[in-house]
Image (cartoon, rainbow over all chains, first blue to last red; front, side, top):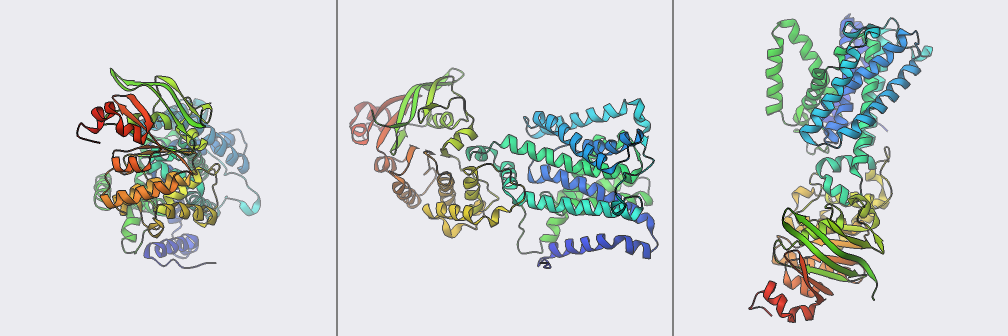
Length: 321
Length: 250
């Protein structure tokens, strides 16, 4: 069943997944528990970036409002917990359904526009969510909401310890990677990718592209809400800040750094982003300046992101980037 | 009255003060090749756009197989069996020719809300796509990316995609546009083989192609259809010669 990928990029990703799978043991041995926190955070954002890449990369729908779904997912943990409902299944079901409904309604409107208008309207909708939570005094408004206890699952699925939460995140990450891969290569994915490059032709072939793109948008939102649900559990404290439009912008950067419309790109981009942020901010308070210059350089010179850079050593690049 | 697959009645479309289509009546008999010729700007492509659904006419009616399709979307009409090729090559450039044609097969075969099974392992779909590629002589180019084949081959791909939809009506918008003499001859051969099996509305500038392919011919000038007749009669028609073919022709 298992074959080692023949190309450099494939091998690098296999190695990365192996390291991530063993990370808790490695960090325990190195006595660096802080980095497990950092890694959990990075992988949670990684899931969000993978979900964004599904619409932004494969589908060509550039959303500047995806962080709203992180927020929705997180508050679907926070608000029930506030009323002492701690069931993890309830949190997960709420996150998936609320994000699906919100994405269906806002997507149905947003997808009537194209290009810059789509960017603006997705941002507007996410700001609506942002200000809604900002104004809800009951749930802490801008002071945020403390989640006193993590979502409750059966014993073997518990996410109570740092390590078990990490493996929850890692499992969800693997699921979203696998799901994205299957989806893109299935009938549905062909239509999505085809519509990104030539919508007119896809319609002439009999595809109602609007319906397919809307479905893709909803799937992506639901995936992102899982990241939000995990984030709520991870942070133990949530505030509207987690879904500001700058967070949506960061997600776009993570996707671009790693490689648009590639399977592992968003994950790699997110890890690099989070680590850079961490280490640069430890060096100087002016780290945003250095970070900005690095991002600009990466976008300008590193066409195809890190994935493009890795696979420039491979003979063939099978992705649609 | 012979069996008409397509009936266009009193079709009008204007952009501002310019009539792109003015009171156009046209019918295409099942199983024939019907060509529309006319000088640049006569409204031929606008007519195709209204037939395929990209443009909505101001008034008039289009009946396909006895049913009005005037309110149907592009995608709906495509699924009813109206396939088109584009005057300016319109394929999915980063995909291979095979993937492009497989998309066309997919469009004609049920919904595409399949989220799990990989398309590249769908042998039936691949076989169908390969046979359409073979029909236009592109089978040995199947694994090349659309962006990396010649212009002529892209034009052939356009036709292969339309064929792969197993259409009842094929709308071909200048399939030979920008082709060299040799490529053009090849395209004529391809279309000749389709003759009789398929109903085709062909828009073309190349007179050799039109005269050797068409069963019937309509001449459009300034949004009007000024004549519809057999190829022989159109060639002999003085009005057509003056309007379009030039005084020295025929």
